[in-house]
Each structure stands twice: as C-alpha cells, then as structure tokens.
Amino acid sequence: MKNLYLAITTIFIFASYAYAGPLGYGICQAGCAAVVMACYSAAGYTWGATLGATAPASIVACNAAFGTCCAHCAATLLAPTL
Image 1 (cartoon, rainbow, N blue to C red):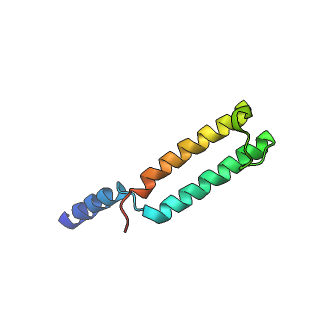
Image 2 (spheres, rainbow, N blue to C red):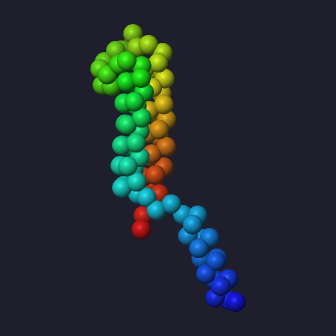
Image 3 (cartoon, rainbow, N blue to C red):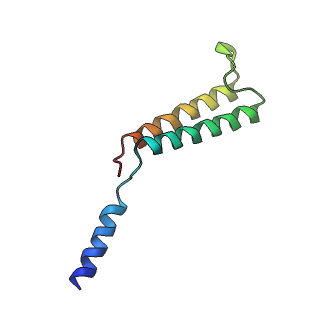
C-alpha cells in the first residue's frame, strides 16, 4: 500500500512540472509565426511588409496577438528542462 501511495504521489508531483526549455520555446515561436501568417493572410496582407502608421486595425490586431503569443513563449523558455 505504501508503494502505491508513493507512486501516485510521485506521478502528481511530476505532472505539475513543465519540461520544455529551448526546444519548447522554438516550437512555441513557430506556432506564433504560423498563426500570425494566417491572420495576415485572412486580412489580405503579407506578413513582413512595412505599413508604418498607415496599418489598418486588422493588422494592428494581428501584431498585438503575435506580441502576446511571443510573450507567453518566454515563459516556456524559462521552464525547467529534462
């Protein structure tokens, strides 16, 4: 019975940790880039083209979402690795 309790406790402890690090960060950034490409395409623009202050609201929203996504990826970079 003690071994079962120890096994279950160990599983719950390790299930709460995120093992990602640099590899997870790269995957997360690639996902963010894919989503922003889809967002730009849906708006009818090309990602990477400079619009400056004349950017329409849809492109500003895409950029804001991309920035938020990349910020969340930073937490993945700092996660412990195996």
